[in-house]
Every structure is written in C-alpha cells, then in structure tokens.
Length: 275
Image 1 (cartoon, rainbow, N blue to C red):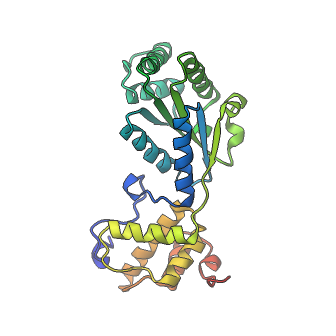
Image 2: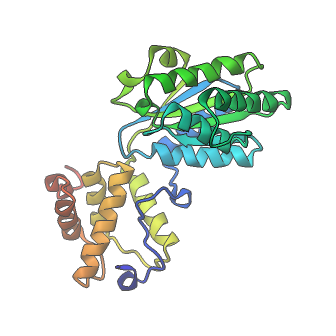
Image 3: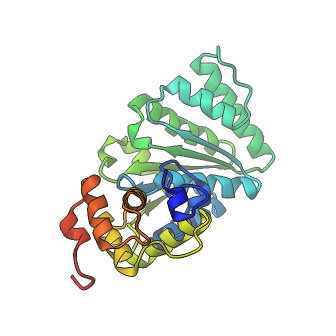
C-alpha cells in the first residue's frame, strides 16, 4: 500500500464505517443536534434523509454511541435484506431481550415488546436506530409501526431513528410517513468541511506534513461535490496515484488522474477556484 511512501501509520481513508473518522461538518452538526432534540423531548420517530454516500449510516452509528454513553438503551439494525423475523431476532439481541435462534416471529416480537416495557417501567429511554428503512419490505415496515403503537401504551419511552435514501421516499408506507415527528436532511460538505475532513483524516493516520496542496483540495471538493463517500474514494485514489509516481505532494493533476480512474467528471475537477 501507499502508507510507507507518505509516512503514514495506517490508511487515512478506509472504506468502512469508522466512528473515529466521523467528521462533524455543518450538516452533521445540525443533524446530531436535531436528533438530540428528538430524544430529549421523547418524540416517536425521526427520519434521516440523504442521497447515497452522504454518511447516513455513520451518523446513525455515532448517535447510537452517544445514546449509550448517556445511559439509554440503544439498538442499531441495518434493515437491508432482512426478513421480519431476522429483524426482530437482531433487535432482540441488541436490546438484550430473551430471544433464541429457534423462536418464531410471534415470540420474538413479544420478547422485544417485553424488553421495551421493562425499560419504560424503569423510566429508561430506548432508542432504536434503523438503517435503510426504505429497503424494508411492507411487512417489516408494518411491524415497525406496531412497535411504535405498542410503546405508546407504555408511556412513550421509545424513540425510533431511521435512515432512508431521499430519492426512495415512495418506498415508505403512508402510515410510517405520517408517524414522522422530525425530518432531518443530510447535505453535502462545503469546501471548508471537505478540507477539514482531509486534514483530520491525515492527522489521525500519522501524517506529519500536508500531503495535498491547496488547489488539489479545492479541486477534490469540486470533483466529489462534497459527498463524503466520494471525497473518501477520491482522496484514497489520489494518494495511491501519487505514491505510484513517487510524488512529494498531491497536486491538481493527480486529482484529475484519480478522478478519471474512478469515473468522476474531470471537467469539474479541473475547474478554477472561481468557476
């Protein structure tokens, strides 16, 4: 890999979800504040929306950890590809309910509902964080609504936070949409956020000097359009290309080459700062 060339201790731009590399840009800061408001006022359902690559899953993971540190019961489940039974089995495990692998759906639901009731009796807030709600089938979505209705009978100690792609709202049932108390939209980073993220990630990886010149960082922002996943991919590809050519610094031409390698529009990458 390229770490040795750049004097890094580890890859600065990994593809996985690493809460340590969560960068609180303006949109992320506002979103977390709104999620804390949702929880503090014991609202039922918050919906985090954003395009693919905007960092919805990572935001959910960061908020889940904040909830646990605050003493709340928190269970996070990615709904992509899950059956209704698999969902309740995973959720039961996350909430430390008495679920077993051989349990049928009815028992799994009852055990999860019992755990929610136990938490409510102890006046303990439960936070369910459901990623990719738009990818859940109609039956699973109905069961999520059922959980919300069940909690209402116990005094409203459940807050549910879900994510969905902003272009896939039509996949959500009308009942769920009507239950949303707070809509939270994630927006792309502005240029200062992109630069701040690059500098933070490189510092965390052990960089002792700047590795991108100013023009390169500006062009990287424009080429990625401030979408966090694309910022990550383009920065990683640029470091690899620079190492392959024994460069001392990533410049605008390196960003162009990396953009071409991952099929980003190079006319954007090469735009002037005022264009």
